[in-house]
Length: 176
Image (cartoon, rainbow, N blue to C red; front, top):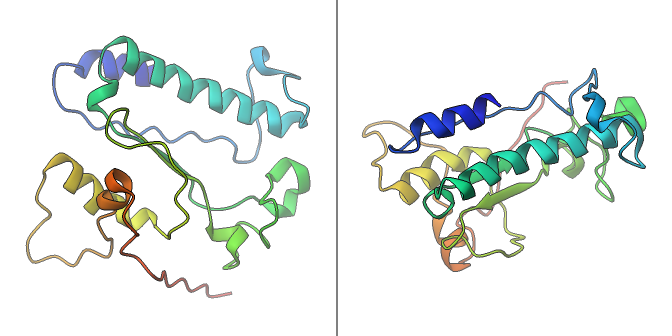
């Protein structure tokens, strides 16, 4: 609701909205309207509500005519919390989860939505959250700070034209 109010209040000017859902982090909560909606139990209910919430924001962008001039990025910071079995999510066929350096811990969805600009497709090339700053700067025509090291790479050619990602590796280290 706050995100929708923000979009309505700022629709006549460029804006940046960072909406970080606390779900599906533990402890898991969902509203009454989403109780027992999913065959995947409580975790599934939480994901259903998260999906609904994101959908409400996208509907507001469409309704207000901002969908053709807005980039929405949906991603996560880590894989599932395997310590909690089914209530921590699933990495599917990928090994391990949150806190590990295996693919199940690091590989997360990265969904970019910009109707008319980013064509729907599956990209298997590598990207990282570090790449959001240079990519968004490029897409919005904003210059990056001069004299500052930027660890990310610009993924806009990948998003807009289907070009290969310029990122070939991503180093990750965990002190256990």
